[in-house]
Amino acid sequence: MSLAWPRTRAWIGTVLNADATLTGLLTPGKVWVSSPAQGSLLPRVVLSHVHAGPIKVNGNTTIWADIVCQIVGIDRTTTLATLEAAMNRIDVLLDSASGTVTNGQVMFCWSGDEIAFEEPPDPGSSVPYQHIGREWYIFGKSTA
Image (cartoon, rainbow, N blue to C red; front, top):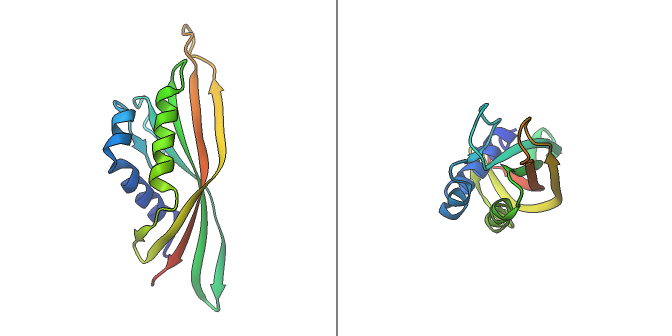
């Protein structure tokens, strides 16, 4: 299928990393479209794949793809202000967004359930890791 997760993930990364407001909020961190490097800076946004289906077919031709991913902001903090601002900016950038990928087209995106949880602080610290974000549904079409 031409509208596979790696191509859609790259499109999301391009949209998010091209926005100066979002990248400014994440400085010195960044948007990671794959697993963040060990020891990478915070705050950061991480994309993770949930599933890519069901795929609707017409004969042997793939014509539609429903992709679900999670986009989550992570920071070591006692306040959520920066993460909330980053997640709100992602909402603005992706809600109803469309674009092209290799041999395909992202028809539109919409947000789903919110994600929020806290990890305990590192030993010797009192500052927890905060995770907030949401699921995103991406509806795509093959052009090949």
